[in-house]
Amino acid sequence: MIELIMQKAEKLFPGYFALIMATGALSIGTHLLGMEFISMLLLYVNVVAYLTLWILTLIRLTRYFAKIVEDVTSHTLGPGFFTLVAGTCVFGSQLIIVADMVTVATYLWALAICLWTIIMYTFFTAVTVRKEKPTMAEGINGAWLIAAVSTQSISILGTLLSPSISNGKDIVLFFTLCMYFLGCMLYLNIMTLIFYRFTFVELKHAALTPPYWINMGAVAITTLAGSTLILHSNFWTLLEEITPFLKGFTLFFWITGTWWIPLLFILMIWRHLYHRYPLSYEPNFGEWCSRLPCIQLVLINYQKR
Image (cartoon, rainbow, N blue to C red; front, side):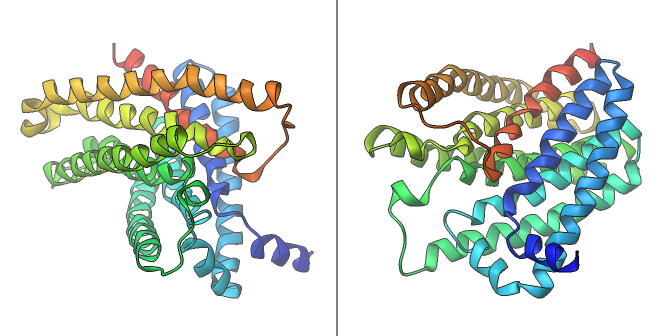
């Protein structure tokens, strides 16, 4: 058994924390729809999954550190580590909304900020300074957008925590506002490269991997982050002053995400029906669920009415 656990830890795919993201979003959605049994069941599932993934990650960190370094500095595998940040923040949001566990969520937010800092600057420094780099066709895919997803998830969790903060509420909201705009910058920069790769570099059907669904997922969570800031604008004067801008910017990202949905479905039909590419499970398949916070956006707005 121990040997099996070690093998799983050594080969752990860094993007598996997308499981936490998807489960947390569904739990929040079912909670706001009044499906308490399903919501709590998913919460318990997420607790077990989160702890299990962290145990495997810590084993990998202590026993197979060289593997961690190799993966986090890779153009293809490195972006998966951002799911640690996003998964932690979505789990924290789930604890606040479903279980009202604000204290635990606060610690998770602090952990996510530390993880974000380490992973963000390690990955982008490594892919920038390395001498031998892959071609654009080989090196970039939708998983890179999880850098934007993780940044927006920190903004969302911090904003949800702000009402419970007695001192320094404006500082927290300033930080979450900055993370929101930073996430927007990351999406626009990375999406430009991905769009260029789509339209000017040969895209074989086998290369159209599931993480490309994050093209839409990243703007879904960006829309959620902007909406969450708008809903908390009464807690800080500056947010009230720039609310008209936030509304327009958030609508822009919502429209962008909506535009992506038909195109992605068409490309999936082209891949699986036209070219008959087999539909099979892949570890990174769970990452498409990063778009599920769009459900959370709709439901939170509905609840606020």
